[in-house]
Structure formats: C-alpha cells, structure tokens
Amino acid sequence: MAKKKITSQSDRNVRKKPNALTQILNGEFLTKSFVLNNLPFIFFGLFLLILFVSKGYYVKQINDDIKETELEVNQNAAEFLEVKSSFEAKTKRQDLIEKLGDRNLKESLNATKVIRIKPSRNDR
Image (tube, rainbow, N blue to C red; front, side):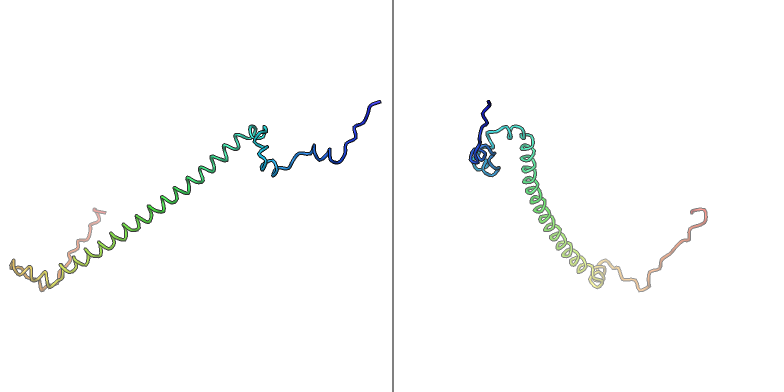
C-alpha cells in the first residue's frame, strides 16, 4: 500500500512562491534566471533612459541658443534704429541744401517729371 502524503496548511504556504515585492526587497530576483532571460529588455530600458536624459540636455541647449539669438536680434534691431535715425538727421532737406550751397548747387524749383515710354507691340 502506498502511503499518501498528508500536507498541512503550513507546508502549502512554504511551497508557494513568494510574491514579487518580497523577491525584490530580498534581492532574490537577481539570482534567478529571470534576469538572464530578460537581459536584452533590461539593456533596451537602460538605452531608453539614457536617450531620455540626453534629450533633456539637448532641449536645454537649444533653448539657450534661442535666447542668445533673440538677444542678438534685439541688439541688431536697436542698432538699425540708431543708424536709421542718424541717417534721417543727416539727410534732412534743409541740411542738404546748405551743404550743396558750398558747391554752387541749388535746389530745383521745378517739379520733377517722369518720362515713361510705352512698350511697342514687338517688345512684348
């Protein structure tokens, strides 16, 4: 006669796999083949993590470049306005007439006329 093994409730609990949280806290999951089987996935996860961090640095660098370029554009616009106002001040009509007086040139009193030539039909 074969003897049946009688298992008690405590024996069943001992044979049951410990839950995942306990394995992680104990470090048991590192000793198992689970890590070796999932090594490509772990490397892929690490690669994505490195990629994510490098993207953050890249975005920060681009934002710094944008701010620097905006500053240069604003400086160039200010210089343009300064040069433009200086040019307008130097080319006032009264000032030009005074400068032309030294050369014996005078302002024309007659209005300028525009001569327009109508294109012939052969030119079209």
